[in-house]
Image (cartoon, rainbow, N blue to C red; front, side, top):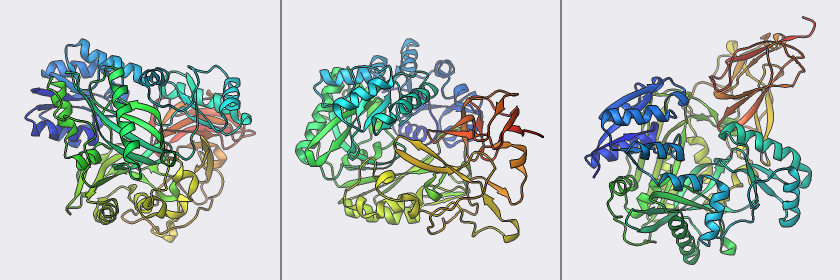
Length: 596
């Protein structure tokens, strides 16, 4: 067994790995940024090394600093967790070249599966069913139209070197091809540094089902259960469960066997997940991608199969054979996981809401597990993912698991920041979810989710004399979905939103606000309505701009949103730079109105 492991991550997954290391008698080394000096994962680890400033590029993404920390502390291995560098082939190669053990697959496997085109080729060689797609990357909108003419619409344009929905656009008809192609390439370049895109037939009502695979260095490879992750928003999973409900034994087995073939074809080692789009009524499944890391939702597999997948990762990395002898063990009962993020769900906007957490108290009832990255008194930093923790329940049946989850969500206490708990309550109570009638577009296309959540404009908890009005709202499109978000300038009046019961435990109304009668619009000051990162700046100081012209693009919750000029005039000053994290309400630019 390994003697010391450096955990190259933060938050919930770092805490999870460090605690498993402690149970296995393995010393742990945490790394942290200046912002995370007092974070839970730092407090729990045996040793901790400061990497640099709050920016991820100077800390959690700084490969050289992480390798140096591992060497200086005598760590034998590096565990990347998920996110940050977990699926970065260059990082895995750097770990290998440094004579350390990368707790994950070989860098060669990460590199191949990280390219959607290469992954499709490997899947074809392994005889894994796929959605019809382009042969390699595409060069123009004409390629999109030709593909649509052959296979039909809608068509998905996807980033070749991406994931998480970034760089993806849905094309409903030939008329949309030009704008969707340009938009997908631009977002792909901004998010991944490469603008290569390819095409796939878009399955508008398929479920997202993934299979957990595990392989060791002795030639053993198995599949150990499946999970349904169909409830998504902006292609981000909100709720996951195991086993995936409503699948036949034959379909389940076929997906598992296909996953093992794929893992063997690419020379995989460690924990991995093969994701599929599934049309259960047709007994059909199609390869989507392979995640070459531990998944956020791995606990539901652990709870239904009695496993510790992180402990298994440590053992395999140490050269031990898998403890799991055979594929397809029958799950015991049903498990469901809810991701709890520090986000304000009013109006279904899911606005990032970092800040100090006054109290965290998880339910203590039987069959409930809380995997958290924070304790009472900790602070959710604005620079990183907003995941506070994961609430997981187990019960003998799916219906009982849902009933138990309902009670557990009511008992979960997180004071100080708004969370996504209200959204989770509405989802698991919905008849479609209860009847397994959900799919990847269900939440955003088939139901009016905003009407089920508190409205943005709820000001019931503010003093009348100090009432603030919400900034006006704007519309942006992601794929084929319309999102109503706060407008990125302080001009205009507030817009109405559908109502619902007010959110508990949070006094602040959430979202950017301004005092009535403010004069910011006249000066043309542009403010950020949410926590986010400046992805690009489209103007320079001294530039002439028109009202409504894009000044810059802010990325928040993996969606790029334009910040527009409130007035026609001249850009007097820019207060941010590309890559900078800005807080809600921060001034980002000033435009002097024409004639002033």
